[in-house]
Amino acid sequence: MALLVGSGLTLTTAFSTLNSLVQEMAPDPLRGRVLSIFGLAFRGADPWEPGRGGLVRGAGAPVVMAAYSAVLLCVASFLLLRGRELRRL
Image 1 (spheres, rainbow, N blue to C red):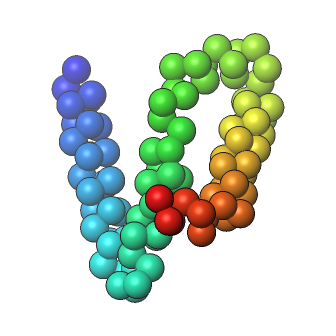
Image 2 (tube, rainbow, N blue to C red; image 1 turned 120 degrees about the horizontal axis):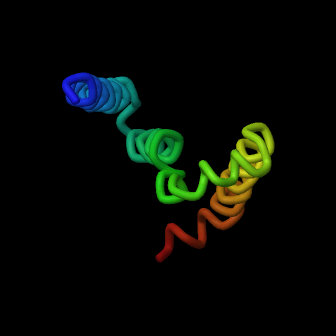
């Protein structure tokens, strides 16, 4: 239990530090976009977390990672193609 507490504190500190560094290093006009990509890369697939273990056991890690990458690529492509329309909302 002590190791879990220590690893949780370390993980929280690392993510806070990374987030701060990304905010400081991003140029002002692009800060929102950079943080959006950062959030998608690190926390974008978290809602799918519970189902991932079963999928990996059934299909294997490379297949699941390829499928998740394809989904994220589709989302990114959609946002790239429809970005101007979405900004108007």
